[in-house]
Image 1: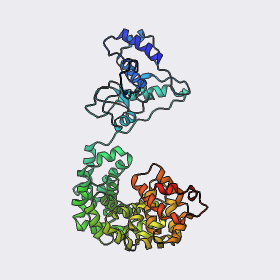
Image 2 (image 1 turned 45 degrees about the vertical axis):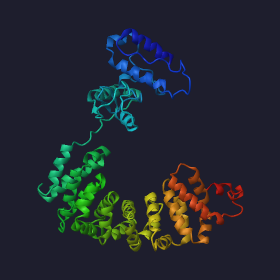
Image 3 (image 1 turned 120 degrees about the vertical axis):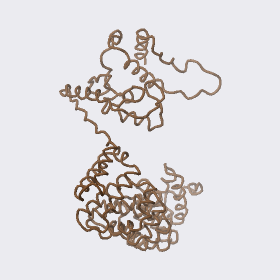
Length: 479
């Protein structure tokens, strides 16, 4: 801090017009409780960088300062201060300029804004516009410096890929539309859209507009009933793009749920698609539609073959993506109570239990919990696991996997509530320890309530030699 103050004194002599640094905090006290104080060190860092980035070269010479800031890395290699991000103090990988004229590394300033800050870190001026403009000149200078210092182990920073231009996306959509030429050229345009969506999250944000989604749905179902390979390819590729960019509620309802012919075509692809890839893409469209709209969930559930198609995906043995899409789709469909009965009747409870813990454990456990709430669901879950004891063991094991714990506990309540023997099996499987962790750990209030209910159910099954039962009932009394 003394070094910073000495530099500040020199800066004030050279450039009187700039604002002074804040006085040291904590020198005077007022009666009553003291307000929380912001950390002083970051303020000095930001302000100093503001001074340094605005001073001409001749004034920097008057400060008797070296051309670099003291190194932060263990190798003691000095990075020029003007190549460092004022927030992270690390070499900038993707320098961008904000509306105040200050330049930061993209990742640092995006993180700064994402945490709720609305001011420029250096100038403290309000950010009236959150647009980040790439500083290509500075990036090229940093790249040249990296190349010049290769002998010191410095790697050249990569040239960041910029997000797709909305105009480019519109051009590709026009080429993929019904007026864009032959089926082969249209499919090629959709494949380029898919490549853009797969490339980065930023591209998917650019593409996630109502206009793009509606156009993709039109392209996907434009050739309904045609059997050529090119038409099937166009259909499948369009659905793959939809699965990545998602659907909004309006598109899911107006462009899919309200179109019975499209729902029937979706069911046909799920059951009898020309390839597993086509079936997976159709299942992903079902999932993204059911996830955003109750109307779409109802219409999809009433369409013959949709839920059966998702179950078939879960039962695929050699493709984990198919299993993942199937489980996610069943969970989204089961958010509607009427679909839970349909799912149980279609064998979804058995299929999900067989895959529980392999992929999508959280959504799998949540789907099992929802299906256990309807008639026949509990028995189907037990049957799918190969018996009550096996079902209990699988669910207790799932309780150790993050947020799946809440749903696994809810399913266990339904499974063991009417069976003393299964309650004993749950205790033997280690449910007690997991439940106590849930009650005492960082879980949601809803998860804690489920854990408390299950603890009360298992109270009589705890063996006399158990450490928890030796606690004199203190833990139980707190629930």
